[in-house]
Amino acid sequence: MNANATTATPAIATAGENDPFEVVDASDFTFSRRAWVDAAPARVYDLISDVSAIGRWSPNASDVTFDRGAGPRVGAWFSGRNHKDGRQWTTRSQVVRADPGTAFAFVVGGAEDGIVQWSWSCHPRGRGTVVEQSWQLLRLDSVLGTTRGDLDALRDYMTDSVETTLLCLAQWIAEHPAVTGRSGR
Image (cartoon, rainbow, N blue to C red; front, side, top):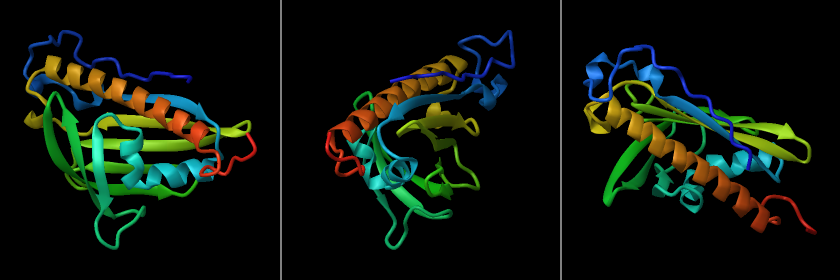
């Protein structure tokens, strides 16, 4: 897996780990990771936009389902269970981008007042696809932590989660060639 990081430089050079988040810039908390997978962009998009499949790859999410009658289209809502450090909670998310074969994104908490945006993009590369997954904190909320140190730790935790997700996605695709349109290997 090829992983490339894009992490913003803190806007407040003097911000300390224990500073309350009121003095922290949410735009400091974003990153992207990439991996090459052995499937065409259209097939990868079909896999990542099927939110019910995320539990196959994500170490933190399970039981993800679109609302009844909804699907991978802009405006659709879905729920999912998350777990971290022995705790579990359910989130509601709204799809904000659904470009088949190209990009899929959703905002935890909804497009109007969400907290975090998750984005996926698919770029053809050779016989496969470079999949990029991004995480962006949209606004500060005490549910995520109350200090810069808390938010740094959350970003680091989510970075590890994304790297695991991409690795597991690539492995799953390699182990299921018929499902991804690759056969005879």
